[in-house]
Length: 347
Image 1 (spheres, rainbow, N blue to C red):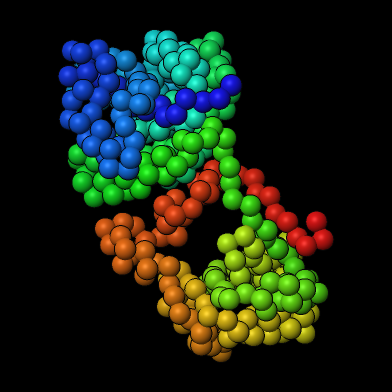
Image 2: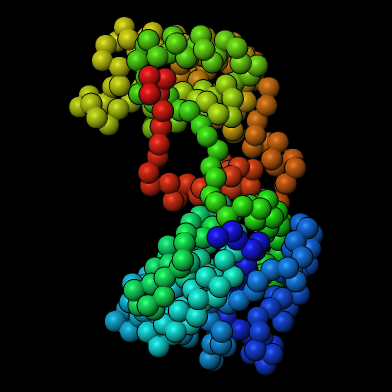
């Protein structure tokens, strides 16, 4: 069964929402409507609900719906650190899962940590925002209601968080723009990439002939431990890359290459490739300096830095590679990549 566009899932009702008995009536509602409109999504075309169709007592904070772990909803992690949503609110999750099944959306936008908790089993919104993830419906056993399929969820900050911290606004806009693109199809489609890992010297030679020599430019990235480069990656395109290791956890001596002669030949490939094509780096001043000062390898054709380009375009945003991946790619959140599929040429 095909999906029906976008569903917004918020946290709980505020004062205005409780009075009207519908979500996003107050300031948060005004803001989310403005943000959606800016990226070309009409609020009226979205299905809208909240995890808790009620106003938390006291300070209007979901922590007031929580108690100790023995009081919590079976199967659910902590909603707030050390605090678990009390079992009396289990019907709210059953109602939420039922609404999702009825709407059958292509994409669910999880607005804030509470929505991510209900749909993904985690409330760490900062670590997972901006990347499409499949629902887990962690409370299915407790509620007796299961999601009819794995729904695509894109978590982002709640508009109330943006009202408190206006610097989050461009991040939410970027996430909603991605949501607009992702809402065209209910499936989670990841880019296809071929990554060569644990190569032999013969692999390096083959990769050079097939991928490096025809490339117009290379993306280069190093990983370090102490004063040692543990591995270095080269990507001649968005769909192919190779990782050349120099340190191995599997070896007692820590050396990936089994003889000094093999390692020297591997470094020769690195040295040649670093000078062969115009090169792109992320925070390249660090990589280029380390390669030159420690190993005498000059990156004479370095011509672009993704971190600096991003900072020029979006100076108010974070500049880390993980964050940039959530803005510019369709990859899963790296926190959720527990299983990686890799391909080598002979596969």
